Length: 169
Image (cartoon, rainbow, N blue to C red; front, top):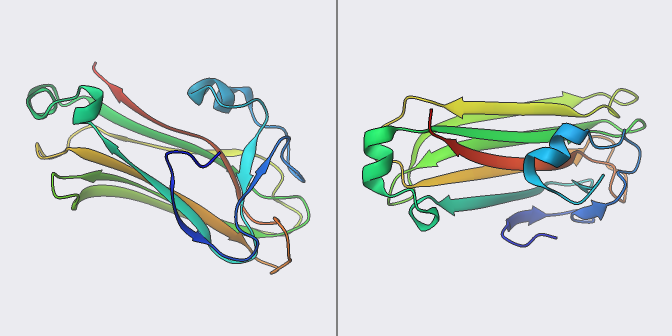
């Protein structure tokens, strides 16, 4: 299930694929529709850092440099996260625009901590890049998390519905 992802850290017990999510609400239908994912499924993190990223070559998808330069389409990122009802967790993500050398041109960072007994609900984090330098060639999607109680197993942040959309207005 980690196809196309670069796993940066898989400490503790690593990532788990849960279907359905254990200890949290069912995945919102909106998250499933956004990226055509497996029904009511997510990745769950462990008691030490679990993180992964995906670098997408816009040219390989047909968004050539001249098109990006002249049209400046909106580049929209979205991810969904939750914790468990019984364990606090930390979730983080970074959405980045990269140049030809894969240097960061612009990014959006989000990090939150969910308290124990408060984490079963799913939340959406999203960001749209509208005005950006002409040198964008890649986008990078990073997310990860951990639990806050250091419990063996997969009690950390859960994530699903990751998506990147390039939209011409």
